Image (cartoon, rainbow, N blue to C red):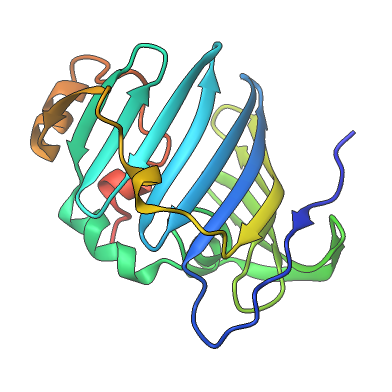
Length: 216
């Protein structure tokens, strides 16, 4: 049984919140996925377990890094100019589903309490299917639950955010790969060309928007 969203009280300050931590559960036809995410400004770290192997994603101003922690190896990909330029437009590197959906033309269909918090629900239906998001009311628009229906495959995906912790003290080294990790360093263009032919790196880019950017 899933409990309500655990939201640490927002710190009282006139300055924008610079650090965020969150956890979320993704449920789809292919299985369940649990992620742990942290950010500091535009930098991000996530941990995702795939078939028993923890995969760490690190995003800096210029690089998108995917690491197989057990194998102590990974790949460092140059981020596209579009993705880097769009950093300034994001509230944080992750948890921006409502902003994107509203920007794509979603409409508010209802409001109320969701997972214990005053929230609003937005929906967008198009030829690809249906997208919905419950987001907390207020300045930071924290997603509570995300739903997607893909018309082409008649498949569904649901993301439930289990917890949000704003203003957590996070040192800069937490967003670095560590000296014991062997990294292959490639350009963005090289990644695009190689990925047309083969799988590149220990895992796919789970946060593709931060690597490629959104179409402008």
